[in-house]
Length: 375
Image (tube, rainbow, N blue to C red; front, top):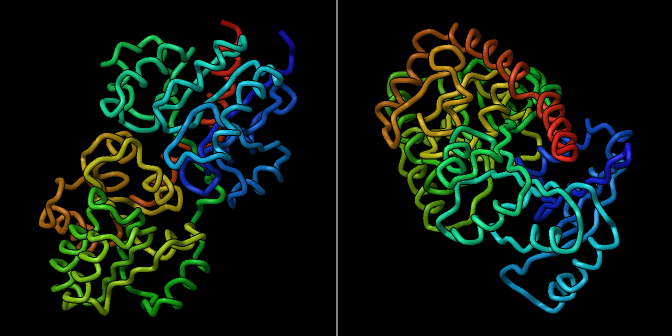
């Protein structure tokens, strides 16, 4: 086998998300003297593609599975796909695809001698059990990103294929900036001395933004200099409309801000004092790590991913699920003792650098590539 391995990474699309940021961080550190990497995406032309290409990596469209909204262009891509991989002769494929379809590893195993790895970054299985089982049977290794994905894969009989690698983060990018934080506060008319609770998440019911709003109302009654700030994409659906109605009807709406989707997340984290996401369930919880990397303590539910990220009473607190009273009690701990915001923030930053840095993630990924190729 050659000293320089040919690696293909497959992904759905190159729109910035935790998955794409993870890919970018991996590529920014991968040893290009040992690995010749290309990226194949179901959809190209999105915003992150140019950033990946600036790192020196080729990005092209590759489709080895049908998807919803199938059309003539996608059909042509699907027909081309097997010929592309047969010609390229990759040594290893690492799939970032969320989808369960087993056709991707099937074509690689049928047409090439390629080793195949996929990252299990969600807890779906029963939606397409036959597909997930076949995809996992064809895979040489499966990357698990949390104890929750560990338990799922073990329960399905794939314990021997698991490689545990946490999602990594750029701790120099996600770093506290007083200047950025002050600017965001000023732009949104938030006093520089206010205690600000912030939530960053897609607006879906599972993320419990309304539970946080109700908890904020409980503590805002006795604390006049606290604010609540939200950001994240929304679908303008019934849940989001209900959320907006709750704000409109709140007697504290003058201290609540909804900023929409933000491109500069370190500015958001630098503008808040405590990050709160009472999500019912998180496979991992990338935003908790982002906030902690910026030196911000977090409040989360005792649910899967956060259990591996947050240390209760040291980097933040846990709250009961869907319980505004419990959440308000945890928020009040920081209001009664503001020094904890500083202490827990420092511990948070230290923990991320030690365990969840992109350097640790990239090193483990490269070790896994070599181990799999040498097997």
